[in-house]
Amino acid sequence: MSDTPVVQTSPALINLAALVATVLIWGFNWPVVKIMLATNTPWSLRAAGLTGGALVLIAATRVRGVSLAVPRTNWGHVLIAAVLNVTLFNICTVFAQLSMPTSRAAILTFTMPLWTTLFAWQFLGEVIDIRRRAALLIGALGLGVLASPFWPVIEAGGVPFGLVYVLGAAVSWALGTVYLKGHPIAAAPLAVTAWQVIISAVICCGLMLLLETPRLDLSHTPQLLAFLYHIALPQGLAYILWFDLVRRIPASSAALGTLLVPVFGVVGTILLLGDWPTQLDVIGLGLIIGAVFLDQLRPSPRR
Image 1 (cartoon, rainbow, N blue to C red):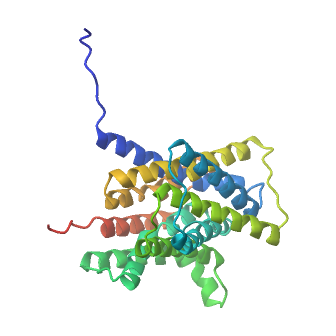
Image 2 (tube, rainbow, N blue to C red; image 1 turned 45 degrees about the vertical axis):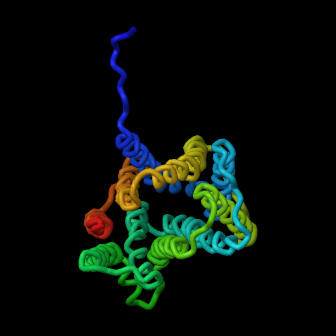
């Protein structure tokens, strides 16, 4: 018999690695989308990306033996969640990147947990304690710092479209999260996600044909590699890893992990685009991450 010891990997270490991989993929997707926007129109990019992601998720459900069946009475909930969680979020984020630096767009979008807290209080009756009030105040300060370049436009009576897009993305995602919490769907989580992406792909394909002349140019190597990454990893593998994680670890731990998404987004922007964040971005990032961390790191209720 061999005396070689068997090295067993800790489940906690596996979960941590999966969480880091997920947020790393989502974080680097921000500069990847920016690369694709150099030669592709926004509606075409979203239509193609969501279609590819839908195919990957359908394949994943087949491979893993997950049923795509959804009760007929739940289809209305799936449609509303798809519009809020996926369609509006993806549309707003792609136009946000056309309106402001990628780092700032990523940071502002990930005020999502703070908006979720507000909507959960409004629609689900969840309590906002002193810790959460402090988190919301710090988050509002960070939002104000990052929104300061738009104040002259607002004061002049104009519409700061970049700010509208990023807040639209954050608010739509938060509303979708709260809506699903209040209207649970009796189906496998991966199947619900797949249907949301499928519905969003159909909507974006229709809007693409209606609003622009489709243009998807993948003849340049950077754009082709970015497109393959966008479909296979953020729209495919990351979702699969994420729903495996939320089954195995506390939701609060998973939410804390998402704090790394804007951090990796900023790092990816530096590495892939050569764009360094401004001092304003760094201050805003610190405030928003601190606020979300304070909001999510709550003491567990006593049993």
